[in-house]
Image (cartoon, rainbow, N blue to C red; front, side, top):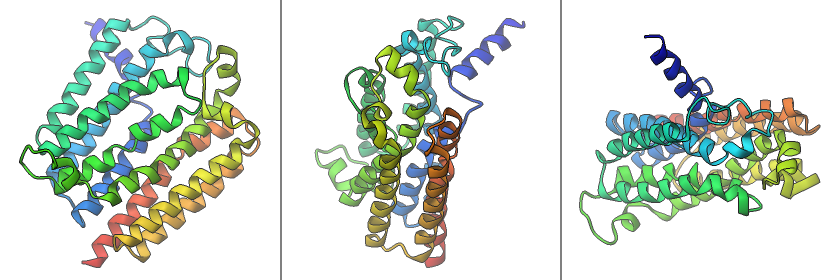
Length: 300
């Protein structure tokens, strides 16, 4: 009887259940887009779909990532004891769990509409691609940025999409501003995942992994701050074009203040400081989301 709880504990460790920062980073941009697309509260159904779907897909992504990186992770201090890396969970088990979680997320998507369903296939493809991008792309964080931002067009599609299967379904459901928000959010992912990469830079250099922290070299800190600036400025401009006002700008200002604090954490490039900055990033996303929610609520 004790074997099942022990196995469950390993699975929870595999999907980082006790470290929610990852799925929060994925959640806040999607919810911000959901509120913007709906011009306010999107309804309980879509809220539940996006929250549960985010948690499930982030968990599935952890399974896929740990299988892909198992031979590299054993050489990195921070990841050496992950369940797949140390052999506590087999590759077959991890892939099976990841597939089950992804299917659960897809079942939720099926309750929305055709444009959202179509976009979910693209989102899955990018999720599967990211772990292997680290072998070939100098800044794989950009690929992660697309994966972690894909909830934005999906949110617009879920709110604005029709129930018909037709060629222009996605184009009609997802306006240009949604894709612009995705591009802007990509800069935020570049900021926080470069901080994350700075933690493991010495180990990654040893094993030959490609990361933005290595590619940027001594310009890493300046680039991170530039990424934060590009994210906040682009979202501010797009939000203004969509009619968001003062409370939204206040949310961006709070997020900007946090970004400035992150500079104090990463400027010396210590593992502890960079990891602290990364883990605190979900508050940046929450500040922007809160600004969106309050602005739209008070505008009514």
